[in-house]
Image 1: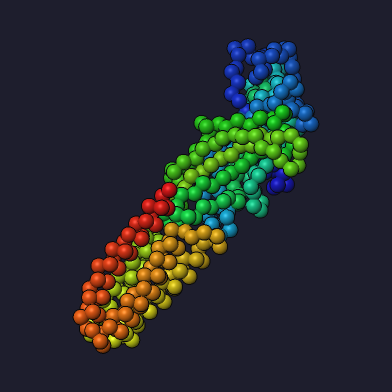
Image 2: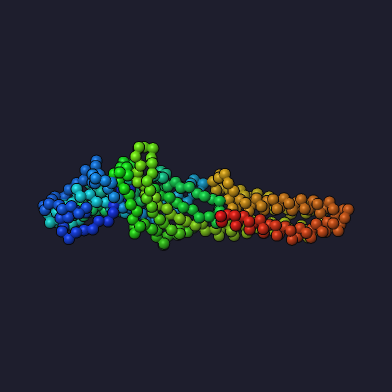
Length: 359
């Protein structure tokens, strides 16, 4: 029943229709005979026989959590609003004693009317739906809302991690009616996000809705699909202060060997080797939060550069120590050159990585 409830709720809302002064004018402008009883739409046929039925939908995001790049999924909670016009539902408010019929909870599913039969295209697992509301105006305008929560699949581009931005996608389409029968329209006024909720690692920057026509494997005709795009930006402070900054300090500490002129190779290499092992440990710490992607993230590139520079420090120590026994002045020149070449080279490589990642 929960799955059926979710299917109904995803029946989205239709275009806004002007109400005429005459109470017996349907939402499509056609006159309705006086005394018409409350009608029921045929659930087997769309209300518009001459073209697609317009359904306008909006989605207001109230909460996001469990944004998981490893599983390529996220969990959301929000309010779905919907409206469409079905003249077959029109009734005489004088006869009915009301100009709007309202249904709540289980009553919504029990009402035998036509629905858009929508579903979440990128749903992972089950969707949960509560607080169902359906209202039918005397002119046949059907509208309603429901609270929805579900886990959805989404692609992540981690090339700029941990300074990345992501776009989470929510997709809705009818699983029965093709574009010739149902055309979904985005309701921008009902689409957005609550600025009061906070995500520990992310900031929501924008929510946009758009509609496109898609081909599906289950049918020969294209379908109308509503896509809700949620733009989020990672709060990079954790990775900046607890991983990148300590990593840079470790690399800079390894440069102290350039002032260890009187030390032999064994003493100098210990410091550089400690730095290498620390970089490897940081690599493992970061890798557990990322999927096994086939490209290097920004933090991967910084780690690789740091690792190579530490390895080059070991090579410099070997050259300086080898020259010390035969030509101490040459060993001193090697160390003095390394004192400025290594910091400048490291800074230049890091700058190139950051600039390249912005492209």
